[in-house]
Image 1 (cartoon, rainbow, N blue to C red):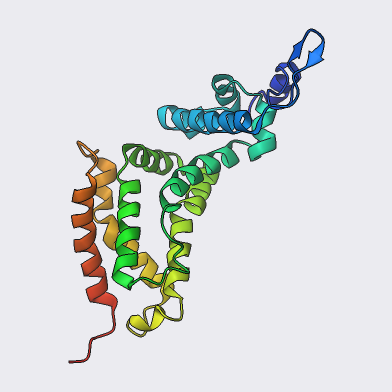
Image 2: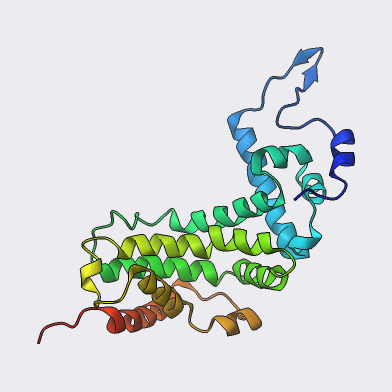
Length: 237
């Protein structure tokens, strides 16, 4: 979906800072170094994320993001395909920052409770961040008017997490641990619901402070115990 006034912007905007040459005494400075390009991309994602949270997805234009991030609008189109793609990248970056530190669920051979406890802690740290709560509120508020926003958010956020867990619960060494009839998809949904707890209150009432790691570990332990007691195969007497 094109942005309002985009054609006018493209015809008058300055050269793309990712490709323009900086002349000095008639000589080209060459292409930016990889570190510079990475820093620019990081700044663009940070700026876009801040504007989305501060103003709301529907009230933020690519022109506004480009101006504050000091890039050309066409740079955003080339790199991300538009505003929806940029929002996708912002959410994915935040999610990856947490789960990239965890061993891959498909190859992690530690005991089941240990694997789920580590996942649960990272998941709870992520969803209790004030920025994450603001993001959820914004998506819910604007989903009706911006269906692509809700679709993008679910695909790269909750949907990706659920798919990751579903693959884990499908593992041939993990699936037999659970009661017959509990499909991997159902187990994924139930685990996330146990960890989420009172999701409505968290979205309606901003917590006074984000829980620290010790508090989250205790909370995860209780909620994970609830999940395991209700889903594991009965232990023979």
